[in-house]
Image 1 (cartoon, rainbow, N blue to C red):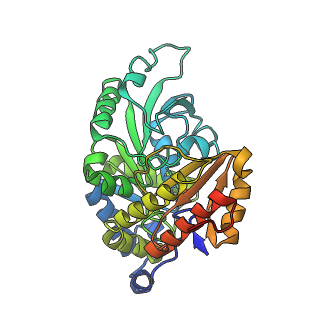
Image 2: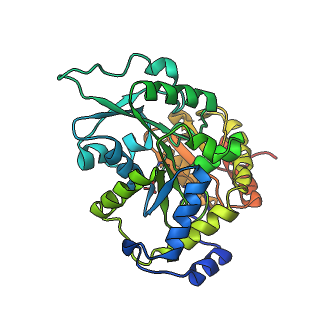
Length: 349
Ligand SMILES: *Cc1c(COP(=O)(O)O)cnc(C)c1O
């Protein structure tokens, strides 16, 4: 099977596994795991922040950030199809008593023009606007990257309004490779940044949150409270360190493979790429149900020919390229996608 459902399906490489077995470990709740400490230091350096904290998931990194920046009754401002809105189980309300104010985006991206005038006045009736939340690359937006100058402008606006700024950078590595803008330049526009190692970088588990020393001290308290204090976590931190050293530049291959798949999708009548241009490793497309049936029908036909993609919602399919699919497999998957133009049977060649 060629598994294009998600970039989270990767298995550790042999070299990564060797690094995991060789890692010196200790009890990280006591702050005594040398490999976790090394990873946190390396992440802080990469992102140009004072400190970082290792956490089990990107969701936890994000939810700790909500807790750090907002108190109950306050609001965060974000794009309406952000991961924190769609796929974190209502965490801001459930875990921190925070309301989310979602704004429509252009394939996940907000603009300064939308934000101006949105900060609520100091008034006993209003939820204080405390946090601007951006996501880069944007998952539901279609793997889209922000323009760094747009981010700078929005960051300046938030600071002027006295708001904190968080970046959901689960796929910041992809944005960095696609745009050529280094991770620390993106991160400089934000107070805190979350990153994942378990997506395109291919580690089995693990994410991190970065910010000031003071913030990360508090983040350790919230991580423990949310149940994320881990013990000999160096076993998995070693995989994350390995991934950050060896699997970032190769993301360019995933992006090229995604473009190849996108070309195949574009060629099928009744499939529409949304957004029309694929920037990174995510390929989202809409299915004309009159022509192809439901997205589940489409993914079943693909599966019958050895290709797995995700059916999401009433009309949507997502394919994701990653470390565990080769160029040849993507070429093969592209042939299978093209075959759907003739109802799933091999067409004229
Ligand atoms: C995957 C993802 C996360 C975190 O996911 P976990 O599965 O909790 O690690 C956060 N933000 C975005 C944009 C994501 O795609």
